[in-house]
Length: 390
Length: 232
Image (tube, rainbow over all chains, first blue to last red; front, side):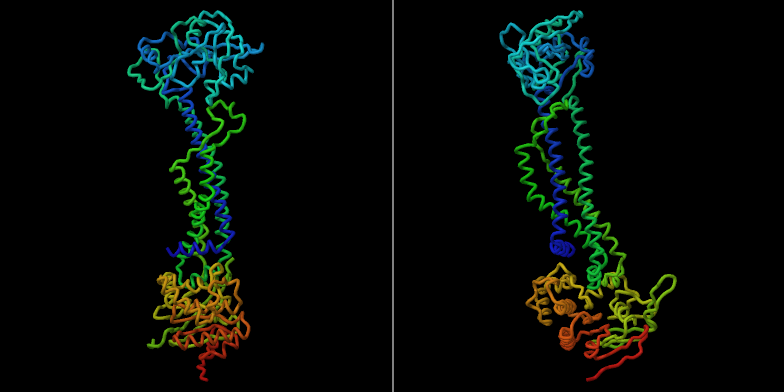
């Protein structure tokens, strides 16, 4: 208690030096919390968007389907099993048929994936209902990224070419009935969504699907031969790994930031111990034990972290709340990263994040403060009183 | 040790190692001090005055011999027990005042009482009394940097006296002061010695201090060469 009282007096008495250190430390707190909040917010938002737009509550894949090997697509679709029919008609499961194709926008050639889906599905957020129109051309929807890459817009008519299961090439005109905006590149970049019955006709695979997207209230209670259930968590593995890597990468940044703050504290402590020798000698002469003096200097250093919490709270809480409300706009170009990133990320701050950040900084500050303070116990008080120690 | 005797030194030797050899600062000192004495160890620079005061103040320990201070053998005291001895029974006054620069006058004088864990109300009264003794109650909120040398030393005296210790050790207390301030300080200490029966031991070579002493111990080359009681 005495150490706390004296340390507080000493710190406040030290004026600007204290406040500079405190500000640097508080900045460290806020930046760590904000940065982690952004990553957690991104994670949270990516999961939400991927669930809504791509993954649903999980998927059921044809056993040969490999999303990373397009050459297997021809062999990775088969007839929709009877056991799924009821779920499909109930709207809790929607089949997707995937085929390779080529689009010829404005005379250019571009490879893409044709994804057939039921225009009336409600399992994912894709605006497939837009394809329920009468048109001479086949109605299709594409995402913003695909539209940008192919220089296509709503109402445009373009030619697509594909190969059916017999290896015969065919081509037709399609009409872009909707360009949708979505944060998940997997349903956008290099993709064209088409009514599934049309695609089944085109590749001569009636009533076939490559995969199913699972909606609410569907449980796969039995194994269906030739089909594999992929849980939501499994499908999110890559995203989770990426977030984990991002956090590890971010840790380097925090390490440097904390190192800078700790260097300031360490420097202040080392300087203090040499500059305040007479003071230390006086403390001992007045009856403080060496342990009391060491603990006073340690508490003094550690108290920077406590004051930093208060200072950080003054400007940090409004800043963090403001960011939570307005979000952080991602720089241009992040769209092309190939991962789900929203244009604006809203940070998520958990109690655990704040608690552990504060605890981490307090512990490191205390250790850094204690290290130079140990020197005090080796000082000769008679020399310290006169400030003679070199 | 007599009833009134608070310090007893016998055969005290203090050596400091210098390179491969050593320097003898105190060489066979035999002294004793009674309660309430206003004594001074005088002598030229390097004669061992400060070393003797440091040993009496349990800030240093003898190489040989016995230094019994307030019933405790300094040589056998752990650093913790020595700290407790100083905290409870001793006050120090230094040549360079050694006030804590970031504290106000009040906080500087209050400091020894904080170490004694005295309650807030008692502390406040004791600090104001001490500041009253040295006549500096108008500067309670000032910091040492805002005070003159004389004022700083008066604060240092108040700090040494605030807990009403049995023993005050003053090392060259007037060395940085002008004549007028020196006399004022010495009169203050003389009054406190009379009023509170506190034992004062000075280490000095300042004639202004010597004039006030009731006992003058001359130290030369680490040996006591004279020990005189001065009667006015």
